[in-house]
Image (cartoon, rainbow, N blue to C red; front, side, top):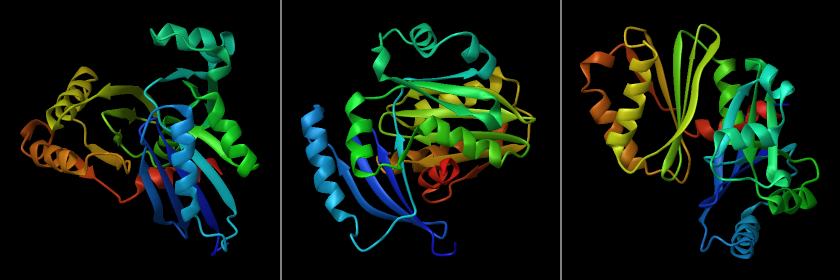
Length: 253
């Protein structure tokens, strides 16, 4: 339908964003940085932010992208031979409560994302939107990346204080990892290190930058400037499509 609309939420422990996707265009309705980190404080801020949703619009789909560092990607064969709890505990030192674990199957890449998600989050949104699709941000990124794969593709989803790095080559997933950063040099280091470690320095490809509403845009601009000064990686083109992170939620409906 040409007039199909989607209500897309983006939620982390730091902020909450509400967007409307209409005819492939994204319109930010609200972006709220949480006043505190308790469940009660976050719920209050979310409820206030949701008052910005137009009551006159009947959305065809509702989706939520959950953002967190604690997300592991494993081949489907390993997931079938194990369980979410064992995989999560093998990847992270922080012990997870079994009921807080979830997973998304990425059929396009024959892999599964395993992640921790607050118990209250699902009930809070499902009560309001019974048909809502809740996925991890990494799951949305992977589906979108596999859809558009061409040559060597590098994807950076940048959030507040950390970013997720995905590299694909020859229709296969090379690496998925999450790194903390404090400045643009951290981004430069981790991206260049992963390129060199995977022997991709002489490849031609694209680095796609996906910015969350909570990301430091000025810091990312500094990354662009410094990256273009590195002669070793001139074969990689930088691409930043506005609201590409939000548009990735189109892949899960």
